[in-house]
Every structure is written in structure tokens, then in C-alpha cells.
Length: 213
Image (cartoon, rainbow, N blue to C red; front, side, top):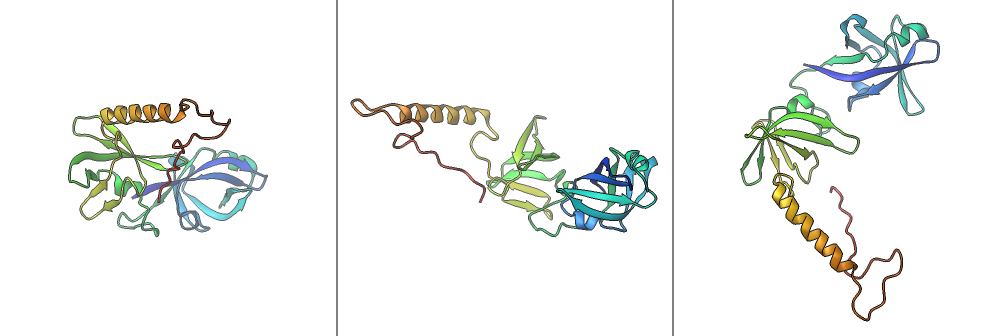
């Protein structure tokens, strides 16, 4: 199994180092000195990592045979690809490789079929599972523990607890309407009562901060 683990950025300095955009949760394993990586385009590889270091929060790599800035700049935008055993699991039990999630059946805790995972979208704040439904439409499901409490690789399924509106637009419209009514009610001033100070929330209108447990 091949996994993209990094993309080469611009050259750094004059001795052949390059910046890399890391695309793996295990850079210390996949991008360690001595690692041999295939590339896309294939004509630029394979590349063997000679040294690696972190500079100003960015990972810098030097490859064997790449000795100057010109050679390093020629590698820009090259994808670095590692060979991974399909049965291998990440060290963190809460993490999964994309290929392990693709094609999993998605069901609710009540056993209702939702669809199957066709793509993983990696975003800065969390990942999204792109699920194709039986009718051909797609739904995006945040990959967080509150919504996806169970991944069962043996049964090839993901169990979800969708909040109102995630799977049903009608539910989302009803919830939105209720929230709007509640906001309007909480922001009104009772007859004869003082208006709230600027920046002060009216009694009963305090917001609760939602966080993933």
C-alpha cells in the first residue's frame, strides 16, 4: 500500500535542503534519515533521506545526491510516497489511515444504513468523512468522537450518532428556526425592565460553549 507522506516545498539555503509539507501523523517514522521514498512524478525519485531537522516550525530534509540549491529547487512540488503494510495500524488507537476508512459502511447506532465512506477530507480543525448515500447523494460527517463513536475494522463499518440536521435538511431547518426564536426571545427587554448593558448577555440568554469531549 502506498501513502503520500509529504510534499516537497521550496529550497532552503544553498546546501540542498528543502522544506516539506508533512502529510503523515508519523513523520518521525516515515521521514526519518535512511528512509527510501518513491515520488510523484516518478522521474524525480526514488529519494533517500540523508538528514532531517526542524527549523522555525518547519521540517527540513536533505536527500542523498542533492547537494545544492539548484538541485533542491528542481524537486519542488514532488510528492513523497511511502510503502506501508496494508495491515499496519497507527500507534494511536484513535487514528486510522485513509485506506482503512474508505469503503466502510456507515450506520447509525440504531442500525439504520447511511451509506459508505468514499473519501476523507483533511481540514485544519478536524477531518471529514465523505459518505455516499444509497441514492447517490453525499453527506459530510465530522470525524470526531461525539459523532463517530465507533470504527469497527473487522465488521467494516463506522457507527455514527448524527446530531439533528446532519443527515436530514428538514431537521436542520426546524432546529435553526427554534434557535432564531430563542435568540429573539432572550434578547427582548421585559416591560418596565432595564435594557442590558452593552456586552452583557440578558438573563437566560447565556451561550454554552460546545467542545468535543
